[in-house]
Amino acid sequence: MGTSASTTAIFPRARRRSGMYESFYLRAVCPREPLGVWIRHTVQKPPGRRAHGSLWCTVFDAARGAPFQHKLTSERLHVPDGGWIEVGDAEDQGGWFGPGAARGACGEAAWSLRSQTLEPELHHLPRDWLYRAPLPRTKLTSPAPSAAFSGRVSLAGRSDIELDSWRGMIGHNWGAEHAERWIWLHGVGFDGAPEAWLDVALGRVMLAGRLTPWVANGALSLDGRRIGLGGLGARGLQVNEGVDGCTLRLPGEGGVALHVRASVPAGTAAGWRYGDPDGANGHDVVNCSIAGLELELEPGPAGESRALHSEHGGVYELGMRERDHGVPIAPFAD
Image (cartoon, rainbow, N blue to C red):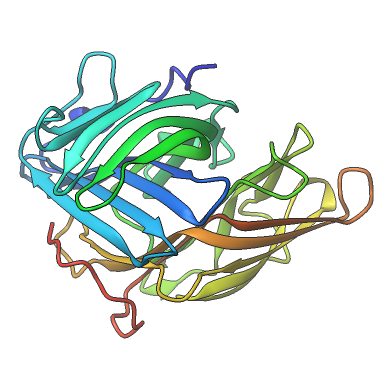
């Protein structure tokens, strides 16, 4: 099964006077141990200037403590034949990403990966016209909310990491600005439900100088059924978050509610600083791609509660303005 034919890069069509950002990313996690790979290709375009690209590579390994992180920024940025994005030179220092494959090198890391899409694309926003409208200023989809990755990741000073059908996902987002505050959760590797996945984003934005309440959009796939979560009209959303994890109550379609607990193992989170297209101070972003997840769906598809557990198959990401969160920020500027 291939990724959606609707997945295309947005940045080549951006107006010169406008500012925007865009990212294509993948994550994959080992089924046996807390070891995960996060590779992200980003575009940053300030108003009135050319876009430039960055390539981010992070390897999470709980046995080694703090994650490996590196970032490469290049003026060489384009949409390659048969692909979504290429930053730098994928044969030297840079990355190529497209349907079915990702390859590249970033500092002391290099990778060659094949991907298989296991589920059709997920559009987080509930209506197609919202992807064309000025608001929301952040758009996101998951071309492959569930995917399998095989191949190799090499890091200097350690044995190659061999991926053999590691579960994960492929994501795509873009917009005129980041949300003021956001949470992104993704989950695979649930005990007793190997095909299940969770993919949900939550955000707060500034409108007329005021911070809006949280809004969630996403889905849980369970037993072959995709259950929509959140939405503008959803009632009963509850959020308690910090850099070490979160607890959520996500209202879903059909009157269900999903209770989520995400836990970040001590010392395993990566810290980045994301610049804003308008040149503002940007956001600190804390991401753990080997997080623990506990889910409780009530009532479940059959009218009964259903509990799911993933020891290390989750992603928990928190984007914020504050700087005093205690997670070291990688020294890579935009």
